[in-house]
Image 1 (cartoon, rainbow, N blue to C red):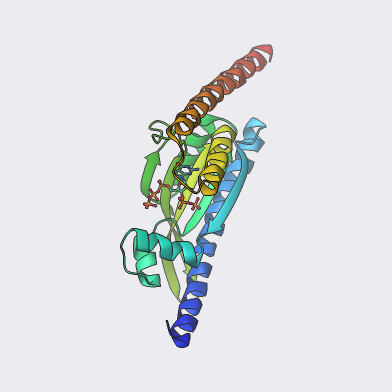
Image 2: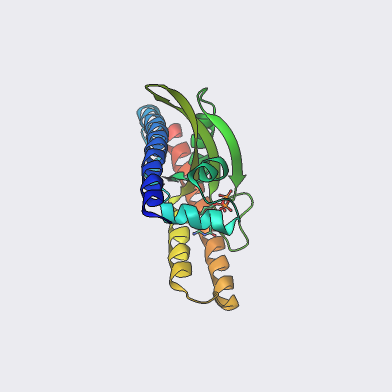
Amino acid sequence: LFCDDVEVLKASFLEMQHLYQSATREISTKLEILDDEFQFIHKRNPIHHMQSRIKSIKSIFEKLNRKELEISMESAKANLHDIAGIRVVCYYIEDIYMIAKMLTQQDDIELIRETDYIKNPKPNGYRSLHLVVKVPVFFSDGKEWVPVEIQIRTMAMDFWASLEHQLKYKTIDAIPPSVVRELQECADTIADTDLRMQRIYKTIEQFNDNAD
Ligand code: 0O2
């Protein structure tokens, strides 16, 4: 690339970053409002914490390259749905579906794709609910619908995914089959514990309702 090309690329990346950051802020605010309302009504928060990130220019280009797509900002905008990402970590499994439903029901949100890796975990054991939604971002000269990938999972699912991600990143070679199996087993144990914790929560809730 020539110097001028690099400068043009940098400028268009900054513009794109601003666009996706604005979309992320909109979705985060919507989620915070839902979390606050739930706390007000039910006296507990469904969301433990949220993280958001904009994909770096390096990983955008790596992904385009991997998918054998044209390497340009236009191509990234047209082909990648996960330039902006929000991870929503919930307390219980049922909170995940409730948050997803309350968000996608809003009339300025367009649901593009839903992948349920909780009902259908990935072969390695990965679990999360993935949504791709589009949200309108308004600027001085018009509006643009911007896609955001939302990963919704429990704290337990997040614990597994974070460690597995780190292990994958640290392993130079392919992970040995025995370790793959052990990771799957850990994911199953964690999923089972998630269900047990939810049952405990329901029991306590019932107990409190009966005491009222
Ligand atoms: P990062 O750094 O987290 O962003 P797509 O090409 O996007 O249409 P893709 O890439 O198959 O389809 O999307 P998928 O599998 O639905 O979800 C991609 C993201 O989910 C990943 O982003 C991870 O964040 C997370 N994820 C998916 N599978 C796994 C897994 O097996 N383990 C862990 N730890 N996370 C997973 P990136 O871009 O890979 O990375």
